[in-house]
Length: 491
Image (cartoon, rainbow, N blue to C red; front, side, top):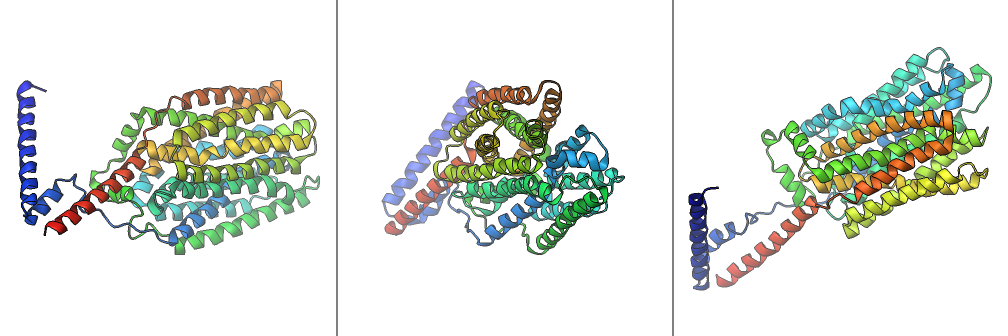
C-alpha cells in the first residue's frame, strides 16, 4: 500500500469519526431523528433476523437416524459371519472382507458430486435418494440367497454402499439447519447414534439369524430370512422419508444459520469452497487425524470375526456380541460427548482427550485379546468402543466450528472420505499382518497410527468460527436493544 493511500484512508477515518461525534452531540441535544443514521453505523446489525426452534426437528433427526441405522447394519452383516458366507458362496476371506470395504471404496469417488447435490438441492432430495438406493439394494440381496449368486449379492451391497454416500455427511448438516446453538452437538450425536446402532445390530443379529449349519438349503433359508427382514424395514423407511422428511424449517434456528441462508446461491461456488477448506490448515490436520481414528475403527470392525475366531474357535455369536459391546459403549460415549460439548464448547480439549483414550483402549485390547478369557475381551472392547466410536460426532462438530460458514456437508464429506481411504488401507494391511504374524501384531500396527493421530490432534488450532458468529450476533442484539432504549428515552 502506498503512502498516499494510507494518508487517504486516515483522512476518511478522521472524517468518519467527526461525523460520529457530531451525531452523538445532536442526540445529546435531543435530536432523536438521527437515531436511524446512528443505528446504521453500529456494525450493520440493526435488523437481526427472527429465529425459532420447531418441535418437528426431533422427528427429522429421528427419521434420519433410523434410515442411517438400516444402511449401516448392512455394512457389517457379511463380515461378522465371515466364515459362514465363505462356505455358502465358496469364496475366500479376503473376498468377504470386500463386502465391508466396498462401503469405503464407493464413498471415495462419489462423495464430491453428492456433497455438491446436497448444497444445490438440499436435505430432502438427498434423503429420498439415499433411502431409494438403500431399499433397492436390500431387494437385490433378497434375490441372491443362492450359493451361485455371489455376483448378485455383491451388486446389492454396492447399491447399499452407494446409498451410504448420501448418509454419512448428514448429521452435522441436519444439526445446523434444524437445531439451536445450545443443542447442535447433541443433535449431531443423535444423528451419528443411528449409524452406530445399525452397526451394533449388524454385529448382533446376523450370527443369530444365520447359524453355522452344513446343509446348504437350510443355510440359504436362514440367509433369505435375514435379507427379507432388512428389505421390509428399508421399504417402510423409504415411504416415511418421502412423506415426512422436510427440507428445512420456515425460520432459521440460529443467527449463524440465518447468515448462511442470506448468501445468494449465485454467490456460492462449490469448487471455491473446497479450495478454501483445503487451505484451512487446522481443518487439514483434522481430516488426517479423523481418518486415522475412524479408519482404525473400520479395520477392527471388519476383521473382528477373524480375530475372535482365531483365539476362541466356534464363538461366532460371541464375536457378534463383542462387536455389539464396542458400538453400544461408543453410542453412550457419543451422547455424553455431544452433551458435554453443548455445555462447555471445549472442542479441542475434548477431542484430544478422547483421541488419547482411544489409543489407551486399543493398547489394552491388543494386550488382552489372547488371554483366553472372553469376559476380559468384552470389557476391553467396551472401553475401546466408548472412546473410539464416541470420537465420531466430535470430529464432525469440530470440523463445522473450524470451517464455518462453509457447508457442513462438504466438511463432513472430506472427513468421511479420509476415513474411507484409511479404512481400506488399514483393513487390507491389518488382515495381511494377521495372516502372517497374528492378531497382536495387527493390533500393534493400528496403535502406531493412533499415536501419530494423537500427536497431530495436539497441533490443531482451536478456531471456533461458528461459536464466534453466534456470540457476535448476540452481542450485537444487546447493543441494538440498548441503543433503541436510549433513543426512546430521548424522544
